[in-house]
Amino acid sequence: MSIPGDIVDLEALQELSTLLEDEFLALLSAYRTDALQHIDGMKAALVEREATKLRNHAHSLKGSSANVYARSLAACCETLEHDALAGNLDQAASQIQEIEQKLHTVLDVFKNNGWL
Image (cartoon, rainbow, N blue to C red; front, top):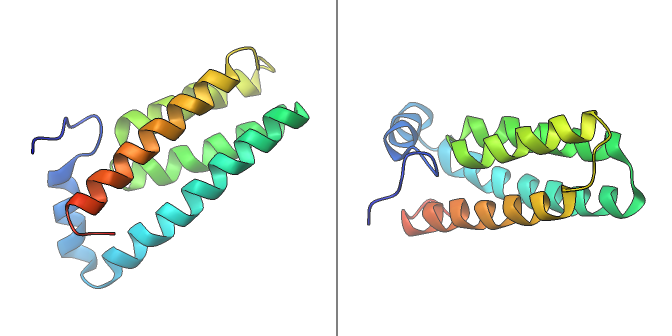
């Protein structure tokens, strides 16, 4: 199955896997756990109308997603981060939904490659 490079850069992940060896699977497992917690944090921050908390969760997920070459997900997090920084939460619910969908796509790619 071909995966578009903006979803997950499989070639870069393979290189990272070679570099990290046994630690690679632990990295992706920790990513999954943390990412799901950030999604929950974003949802809670939106309910509380806490733009700073929302921005912090989006920023953290952006960075960790970039580290595992999930480019499209990182880009969506960056958009939400900038909107939250500006105090603009009008589109946050739909942005969080899109981020969550992209995260599940990324996690499916990891699973399909035997990494989770």
